Amino acid sequence: MSNDYDVATKLKPEQSVVDEFVCSRKELSVEGKLGVGDGNVIINRRMSSGFQALAEIYGPFVAEDDDIAEALVATIPAPRWLLQIVVPAGSQDDVDIALSLANISHVVAMEQFSAVRVTMSSGTRKNKVF
Image 1 (cartoon, helix red, strand yellow):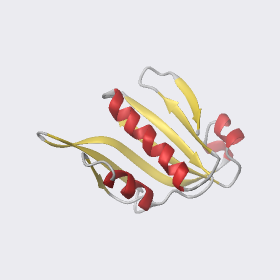
Image 2 (image 1 turned 90 degrees about the vertical axis):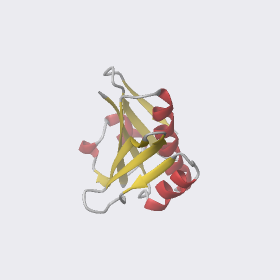
Image 3 (image 1 turned 30 degrees about the vertical axis):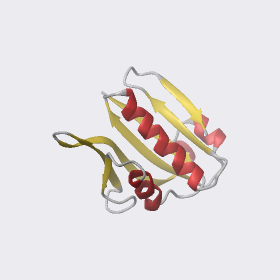
Image 4 (image 1 turned 135 degrees about the vertical axis):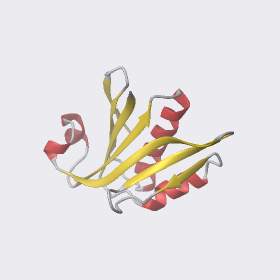
């Protein structure tokens, strides 16, 4: 089970946003680059036994209306970019870190339009608009 987040933004998310976020938290490291190859990035957390994957980020992808939830289509004007953040079932702290990254992605882009479609491991879905 995992918590999956679709982060829709007006401006294309850049790798520098992920890098700055990870650098601001000593316990995190990053593998991969946004938009390179499959576009997947792994955020790792430093543990006493080594590093453990905290979240995986896919994208950014150009998001067409039929690619994202209706609530996001209504919230974010076109053109849209989509990041998908997957957090393996874990602690609430892991989820909070992933949501912080989603929030920073939109704040650094200085856009008033950003939203997240959340599918919790319980199957519950909700939208969060920043």
